[in-house]
Length: 112
Image 1: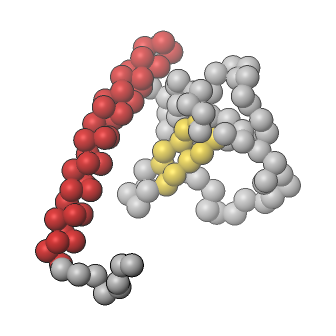
Image 2: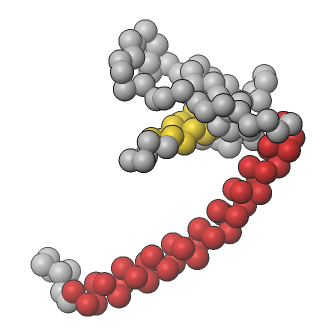
């Protein structure tokens, strides 16, 4: 991925796993590669001239030995699975929150 792009994002989780992606979802082979000559590439201006210390993200893991179009297809299918499940999982979490709120009784603040 082109980490110097304005649209590049990364998240590091407590487990040490790092998610790298394009905010615009224009990198079908993320986290390994952005498309050549990406029309949305813009250099990141916020960190120009900065010196990065030891908290810089870890290196990207090795790219799998799968041809390009197959990787993009696999990642697209995985994304579709997540997108199909997300609304249902979110609804379940909200319902659980409502049940917990009822069990705990009134909150310490008053609603107007």
